[in-house]
Length: 265
Image (cartoon, rainbow, N blue to C red; front, side, top):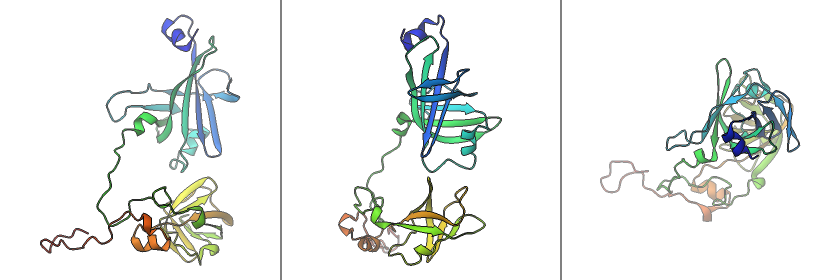
């Protein structure tokens, strides 16, 4: 009998669900069943785990579910300080003990986590992401491209540098990396990769790099990679030899030419 038929019949239905959480270098396979379940070579461990029904409406929460797990679970502990920089994909499967069919009930990514007497994980589906408004091109001085995207055309690999972290300050945000003291590019506005974590670089001066937030578990000496940033202005675009792709209006007058008072830059 199919999954839907079993659900609708209500006779002898003993449902269970499988929850697969995947991110860079980590996988958590959990199930609401009382014993381990093997599906597609993945073993799902029994866990106290529940969820809400997916909401389908015109409201802003459409396509969103909440998953509840014990707050001392390894997955919950991963979410304690903040979400990992790499997105965590979520897939929920449904089946019955007396059924051979397993169906996908939900796919999406973790959006946030809240802790009370348990860990409440909010997950957004692809449908939820479609509600975002797509911005139009603006008449503004900064370039509208993201550094390294298809419109920009700059090669991020050509502007990524390897170094060794030799010191970390007490906040965990200011690093000393001697190899970055004489780079041809500024790292400000770029990002640093440490293991599987990424952090935006908010300032770069010589061998000193300041991150937007600390990376848990970071210590020295350890290797790290950094990708240069872009100030999104014409001069920086010229530095990267990509002026042909510049999508800003750098010659906007700083004073309104019609009345000489209001700034329009």
